[in-house]
Amino acid sequence: MALTADYLYTYTLRLMKKNMAGGLKSTDFNAHWSESQRAYQDDLMGRFQARNNGKEGLNTGLIENETILQKLSPFITPIVLTFTDGICEKPKDFIYRLALRSNGKDCYKINHDQIATVNDSVIDPPSIDDDRYYFVEYEGYYLFLPIETATADLDYISTPKDIKWGFTFDEQGRQVYSIGLSVQPLWDNNSCMEITKRMFKTLGVSFKDSDFENFGESVIDKGV
Image 1 (cartoon, rainbow, N blue to C red):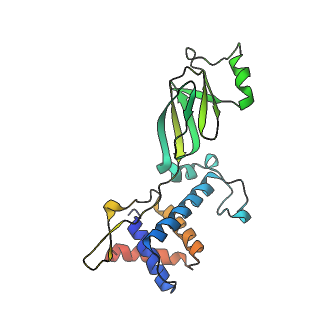
Image 2 (image 1 turned 90 degrees about the vertical axis):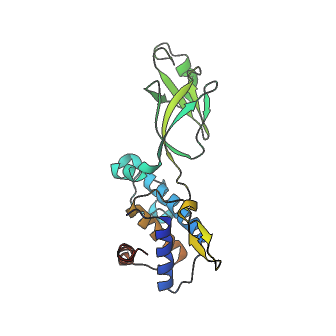
Image 3 (image 1 turned 90 degrees about the horizontal axis):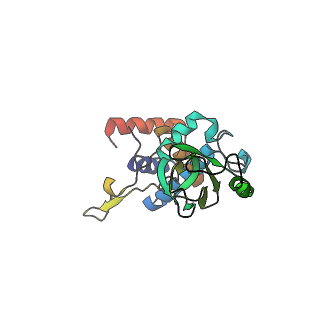
């Protein structure tokens, strides 16, 4: 069973009630959970700082671990880039480049101080006819060589969309969950649980791993 926004919000309210920690508005839940999922993604991809600076989990990055790539697979996005005079902006939700190809051929990343050298090369200059492509990466865009290249295929890791527990109102003015107005998490169930645990730490709510197991059983048995 995939963990929905409703599942996670309902669980959050139950555990907070158990801890006598008060309630949590759905908008606050959306904000806290979304912030925790971004931090979790940062940790999976690998941070430069050590754990004592806020990093949780192992000191590993996505390129070092196929399991991490699998967790990030819902956010691996292919897109066709269109260049104008060799320049194309990165997607707005871009985080990390996995691959860049043109005409099915790999494009080679070069440093900024290599542009002139590559352009003047008599051995391996940029060439559409020879399928030899180079690119320089800037914060918000790519510079592509040769500049006459029209398109390239980019595979990248995107930012996860903010979760949203959407609702309508019943006759008494109470919030009622609406799946159509909600944005569901794309993570696997174990990652959803880990993100929720991180949120609880931020909120100062204590929990045990068995709490998640017990709640999961209640949802399966009672459908709530």
